[in-house]
Length: 512
Image 1 (tube, rainbow, N blue to C red):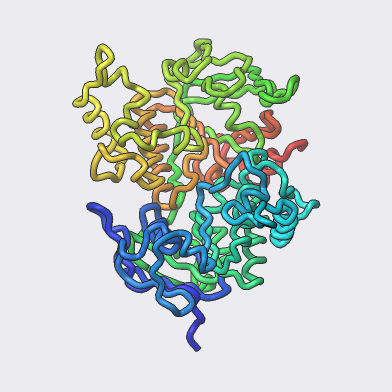
Image 2 (tube, rainbow, N blue to C red):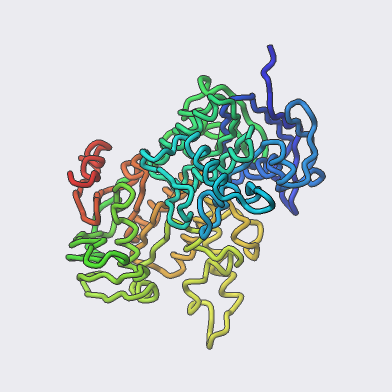
């Protein structure tokens, strides 16, 4: 008996100037199943999803799309949503100043006698939130009249799902839904997806987190270089085989650990504290002291809210509240009040949010590469284009940044290549210390491996690498020494030879 497909795509080809994003892709989704779509950045996942969701209208691509057995020629997102197909993108589409209820019914508010029926909108929103299990007793409980600006990322994600249910969704597309969620929020989201599946909603689930894919998917399709490589049942794949299909080669060791020799002390922080920006008298970071040496990767581990990002953002001079304590670089006391001070001291922070805080997306690869070191490519305030091109080409080659044109907007690059541009921007500054905050978030497995190799190369060149990561495998796989944090305090320090997942988790739990 043939499967009952709700969606079938045949021979889908999509061309951009100079790039074939999709080449004769076939893709089928069984009704009532969760179908995972995986592949490296640049594999064509986003392009395929944009075709399904109407972002790219019929006529802008070749091939056929069938929905419920009928050929569809969608011209807009609205046409798609009328058929019950809803896509929740990684960049959430919510209006912060409106309430939860107003966001859920953003385009189609219930009316009575020509006026918005706020009572019905409130009650209907309550019903939709209840449907996905967000009642008043849950940790992620949401009130329909709460302003969305007051919600966490996980709660905003749930509002988007409720919005999809309001549109009577039959095919829900989730694009990297857990990229910014805590482990607890991930569990809630995956439970909701399972609940929707049991109610007959079909889901397409796109994620770089392969453990989640193995946990939730019924079928898995792998894309590579714009082509369909394989579609298998989850039971027919393991994680290693999936990675091999995605990258086209076997990655025997996802974490290329190399022996490092710990050298001289470079960064020393003593009794460092940061006041909470909104709560008077409360310390966000309290009496933190640590050291970082040449020749090592220092991992910073902890649960969400531990204060890891806030600590290093304050040390970098970019936090809203300034820190108090002593900071020494190469044995000399330094005072860092803003990022320019940090750069002058050879201290570079690569933010966890590369699109918002690491790059200017409308500027070119070349302009982003030299942005933090304009003094090296300019004279009397005028940029020397030849110098800028030389620096960019140097790091394009050494970091293997995949772009056909350094004058192209950096937004056109894949996530992994964008992260390499941020690294290039750091290296132009010739730093002594690089802090990498969530260095591989939203990056595919192949690009992760490249980033890890670059980290090892930088350590060999004498750069101090401090890596903040929420991924326990990454912390254990790449660190030489690990510091754990909880509630703004350091709770432990471990050599990699003694560190295990259980030990790190115990040290990261507040109150332990």
